[in-house]
Image (tube, rainbow, N blue to C red; front, side):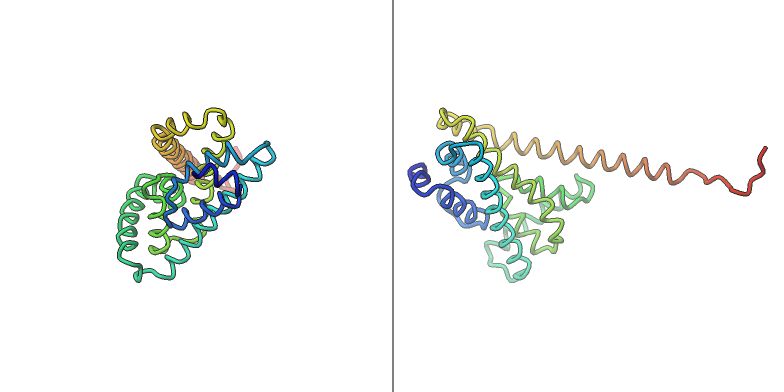
Length: 214
């Protein structure tokens, strides 16, 4: 049982499982179960919760960036299975680029929160040449949510963890995806309004300094 293993080995085992999962290596255990169990069984105080959060986010980003870097170097030499993943990720990334006004950072942020495509978008973004800076800016806040939400819920509802797991299976994925989409679209709308406002101010005719004073 994952719960027993986590009780015996604590955060190092949780961090290892998160790292392997973010690399795309199957662990046989859904990562949300690992995080819920870590929050409910391993963490014993708010201070330990903060420490666990930082450690697990770093483990998530370490695995993610290792996979992203490897896909950058491999490029077209990806194995067949990953090549198919890359093509699917490219299609998803292209769709979200259009929806979000060509903003790679926001597209990566949204797609890194979707369980089915989050690994594929890591491979695809690397193979497609998305800038590392843009990938990190999108992937890091997504990792904070991806790790923090189940870890925090495990801590808060540690007395009813099994009921919480069943509830999350039904609702967490759609809720997180919906929130990510709303936040990303709102950010694009605000950015476009500010850009239009700045363009309107810049387009105002300048006052001639040598005009006669009436």
